[in-house]
Length: 149
Image (cartoon, rainbow, N blue to C red):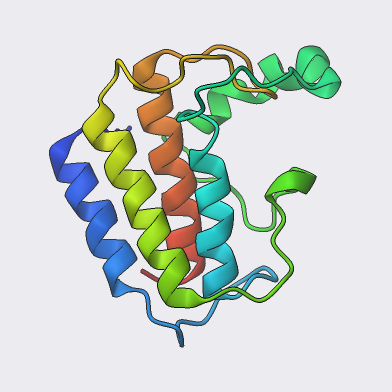
């Protein structure tokens, strides 16, 4: 499984972000490209958080059952359900969202394994740094495939 802490994978991700344009069309789902970038930004706020987030009740009950799917080699299926706080419905500025996502990816990579995942994921619980690197790559890859990059 690719890991966002790996330099080759990090460079691949930056290249795929840079391949996106305001006119890039989705191949499935409801978000436009700027909304997708904003959605991915929200995901990065979890492992980069400096504050503990409360565990979700559903996560305590079922998070363990789905956790491994977040960082294994199997691609995610199209149109998976999204946590309400990760749903982006309003219009977003593409250039701003692209720059801010790039900044978060850089912060994640440059911070290294010591600076991410200081607290458990609110839905899925504790991750190792390797699992964080894999799951963040997998989430980005899912959405990059959604937009054909």
